[in-house]
Image 1 (cartoon, rainbow, N blue to C red):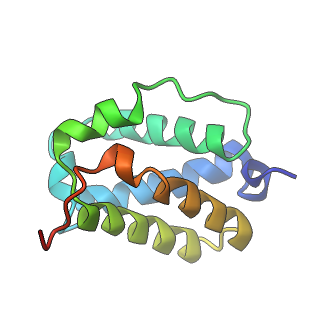
Image 2 (tube, rainbow, N blue to C red; image 1 turned 30 degrees about the horizontal axis):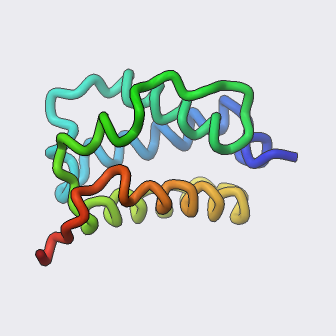
Length: 122
């Protein structure tokens, strides 16, 4: 069984991704990155990305992750905030723990592609 299946397939992942995107849009620390952005498009791209790396049948069709995020000048603290929100959403929705951990590990490994390398304390 794939992590995609463990997390409920496309319907289950859509619930998780939608809850996650809702949280990041509303977050007092990183929400400013999403002001004026197309929420539905972000949900679809996050969903594609999750389906692809969790063993589902869909490939990610967006631009390379680093090309999308590097211009935003995201620091490591902001990146960790995103991970904390994802972790909380997965826990609140009772996501399979092993699949959730692999999802978080996958996203954690994107640190260098997404951030400027600085921290909020730098």
